[in-house]
Image (tube, rainbow, N blue to C red; front, side, top):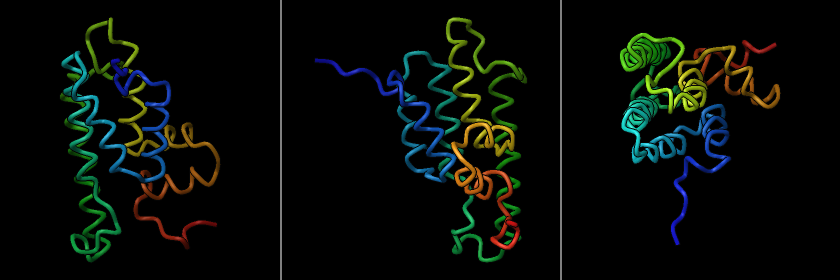
Amino acid sequence: MQSQPPWDHSAFWPYLSRCLLRGFHQPATTFLRSLTKHPHQPIAQFADLLATHLAVYPRSSDIQRYPLDHQFLSAHKHWVTRFKSEVSAFSEGRKDAYFKDVAWASWNENFRVVAELMEGKAERVLEEANDWREAVGAWGVLVDVGSRRDDLP
């Protein structure tokens, strides 16, 4: 009996989005790494690129690496710049598709959601969040990483 690959499960992409929104980067990285075994090489390569970047996503709670706020904010800014640059290089500057082959065009939207969440696009975070609580939590982890409790009305 052969089991289906994880990416064929109907909950794969929604679970990955939930992990990103809730700051569970290690499980999200594991799910992305499972895609590196995908038979279509560009999908495997892009998944590896995303997983590699997510694994080194700066976290404000890492006080060993970022003892001061400005060090964390600087590291996050550099991470976002590097991430955007490598995603753009992978897609050869195409904004509408990550994969040239039309047979795999349906994968573009799923990857776009993941990439835009990782990038911290406000519209995507608000669109993907189930409720205001999840949106507020994701906002602090993905969009406005320097926000404090006092910044919330």
